[in-house]
Image (cartoon, rainbow, N blue to C red; front, side, top):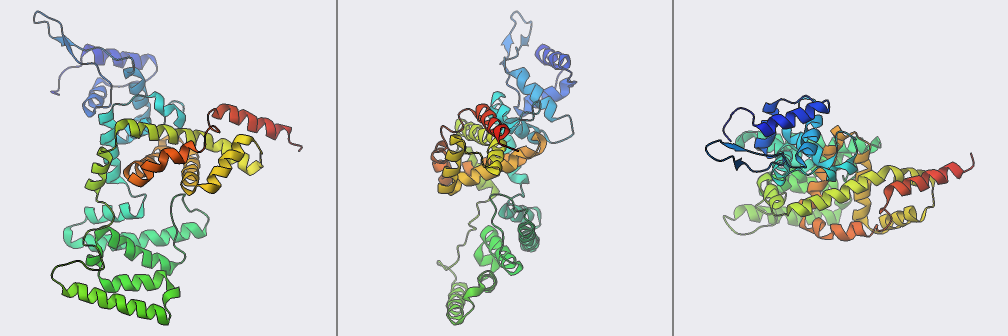
Length: 373
């Protein structure tokens, strides 16, 4: 939209925010509008050449208040949108997120921004490093990032700081081998080269380095050599990377309906809200029927257990930090067709244990208060 003086609606919104102790310039409000972050009613003509006006929607103030709280510190607007989408800055509770009706356009733009910035996943970090470097330096940048990332995962695991949802290397040698594999998954196995892949296998799987393993590696090496000698045709390694590119991931996300994105968000928000209660009950050995039901499902469903573990990790952070882990998990569920197709089944298996989390919390606390000291 063309830059112009604030409209009556923009001024009115600014005044409403000021009443609630939030000083927001109309220029910032205009920027929120241009980004698509504010629900806004279409303009209507006043007639007889008197121009036009627009009215505020009932949900506009709630979104503007949340954005104002999320932007008290200088940070990208995309980050503020994602923080509001996943957590509510006023209450610092993830459960409040569904009550703020952010427009679809802003959320999708912010999710695409996050995917471009994300380095929380090893393959995403490798791709980002390669994308940021010049074409002739992309491989070096990817290898440097990978061989820094995987040893870090190993050290975190040995110190008991492994993040939920990650697989840590078994040793530094395994980390070295996994780093090579990871680069091959991002940039392509052919570009990394057969010798490097065979060496990576021997490092990550030393148990194969016996006579049988040597035969396997010898056959693999011959297959690689034959592949490299071919001008065309298929070989043992894919031409294209197995890790989808940023553009492909954005396109995958665009194919997921906004209602589905919000539904996944709402469920994850509930899991995060329930996490402190469930963690307390588990540590204290509380034998509440709902707690026992959740634990039984966790034991029988690996994916559900992962969602709960990652939700618990997210719950330990304030909203200004929790948004990042929450957004990463949301994208992992939505981008993967397999995860998305099983998500409802995986989480509804918990029903009805989390139908009333506040009541569950009261029961757990009551049980702890009755326990002899």
